[in-house]
Image (cartoon, rainbow, N blue to C red):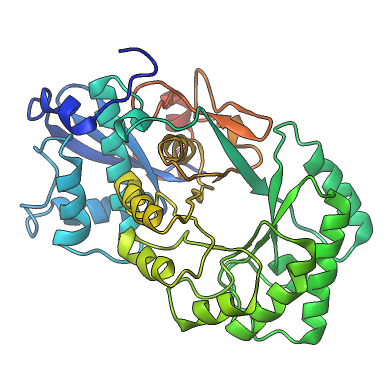
Length: 395
């Protein structure tokens, strides 16, 4: 097949269906970064998926899935190409909640990696074909005193001249309010609102008009505070107001949408398409930001994207968990028509766990790998030498 071939996954997989079996699901927790799940097959081909949680926690979640209580739902001995069946069994036949979702999402991602390797195609082609060969990125602003004009001048110089060429950055609100990331704030008053306004005006002045700013929250605010923040930042015309209020859908989202013209972004904590449905039906967000680790893996994210497309709402991947998630997110993002951006950490291309061609980031864009599966090239010697304390090797 030529490089521009679009693969119809079900028909392409039919010739291989049933000829390969899953033999093991193993877990490795590195010292830093996401825990990795490895799905092995009797063909000697394996797939890798990332998740949050410690090695022992993820192993326990997988042992429950594969244990005697749920023998009909486990994956061992099954066809790895039956991804839709496995996704249903993991997330719907026996509904999951909480951090177990991440472990199962990692399995789904690993299955797509296997499928691409078995069929000798990148995952983006199995998903219907790439709409783009480079993904536009946004990254993150470092902390410090956000009310200091001098600090903003220095900080902005580093952002504007970052060698990766990012043209959009998240600027975290907790640095302004003096709190901790993801910690809920009490209601803010006029003084705090003035501080927010000043901080983001300083950011805009320092960065200029060619760098987009995302007002980055972590669901810390109540509705009255979110309204004050939206009013305070509107003059700088931010790209997005991200995750301002509690992550689950409620009437507060409708109230916030009615009170501001600032574009709203949320979704890193939603799971499966039903988690996105009310946000879409009520038109309260300008863009959804699912995380493959949290939303049901590549299959869950694709179903969210297909649902969002009915409402013409764009998708951008939340992505802060290292090399494997970067590779999975770029494959998914390439195959979604309305996917204008993807998140990426400032030094994602360092990727010490990778060997061969690492992530290619230039001019604020990430090149989409066209190697089979997720395109991973993992350095197993590095991973073995950098396991978390007491972590066994692919147990």
